Length: 244
Image 1 (cartoon, rainbow, N blue to C red):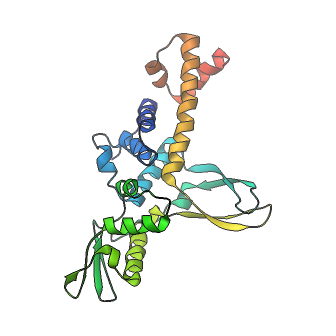
Image 2: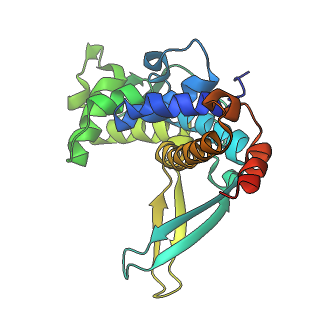
Image 3: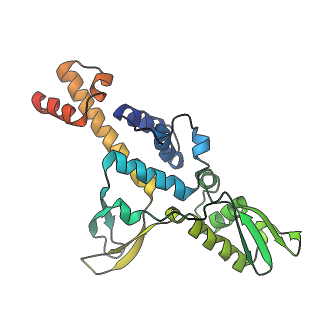
């Protein structure tokens, strides 16, 4: 079972994440609750399974309710969003496996699910190039008529079959919210990126907490460790007494 992170654990994870590239930062948060696992190991988790663990961490640290903001792509109106984590939690694949095989157009293709490590290797502004590069990395073996076929030469129907099976196997990897603008009536779908959302939320929390630590240290002369060992309620009570 994942460890319960303390305020000090989460601050350390945030500090570790600051030294990493954006794609790796959420992995530092997972490392805080999975002691002994390297970031390299966590980077090999399928994207959706990684995000499911991040959402579980978010629920334990900040609760299930989410407040956020979206911008209407039609009129630039800012929308305040409020939803529960259950609204963005996708059901796990009951047939979860390390690899999957599909058959289409006389071809068979065996593949694994994309990971953070894969995304780090295929970053590009051209989404079609990213799509092809992920396919080449994740398809472990493809055959037609007993002969090996490179992933880049798979017919479109086979590629579609692979991608559809990936979506069913790891549904948490691609979660969207259906939104409607109250100002202009425009409706659209917006992807919910659990990893980015949690990292930004934790960053705001960490900076706020450090301000509280600085105020309490000035007011009472306590060390950071002593302040972080307090419960949030006790820290706030001392802040109120100090008038900060």
